Length: 254
Image 1: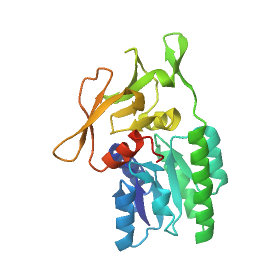
Image 2 (image 1 turned 30 degrees about the vertical axis):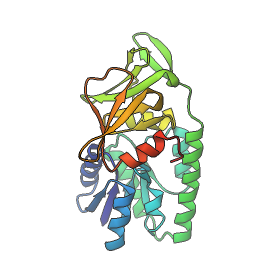
Image 3 (image 1 turned 90 degrees about the vertical axis):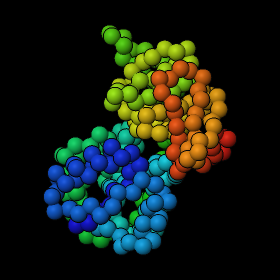
Image 4 (image 1 turned 45 degrees about the horizontal axis):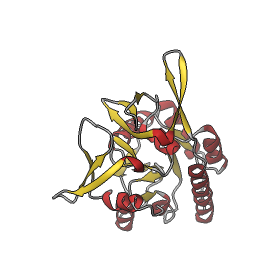
């Protein structure tokens, strides 16, 4: 069986690749794609696989832009809450929850192996249902994060958070008042919670629009970001992600 992975976080993609191989050593992973543009280019000149494992939100758009052109079963990789996960399952496309486990991948593969044939119009309907769910989920964001601190639970308003940073595999948040908390969630999970006022600029940073002072161009066509709170290292945005970031920064709909 040939499998393609669509995932823009290389550590997550590598973890998924290893987990799939542990689940079934006979699977051949023919490609790992990290963006909509790369996916469209790849499938324009390569045959479709038997199965795709795909994240939903990529750096330059949604994976539906790739998947809508293919007649291929898809297992979505998601960090959505239980309500959204149940809706995914009701739409007939399986999912695995980040972080992956061998058991969750095995279960998803077993479901796939029970499939006989999926018609293109059914796949298209499923993608559209999930696209609508994704839009509705983004529109109904929480206003606060609940932070477990010692023996208490603190509500921290999302609007008061300047940025989230991954540092040595631990995620922390920094408020505009320069208070640090540890939310106990991955950046992928937080990205699905905090809404459109935040942008995942790179693997390490998820930044509030209000925290951005300016963005400057580098020689490599990357961007360097200045923020209103102190950070220990420079924040850069890749040349691939820069156009999407600038569109978001201008307030345009992504």
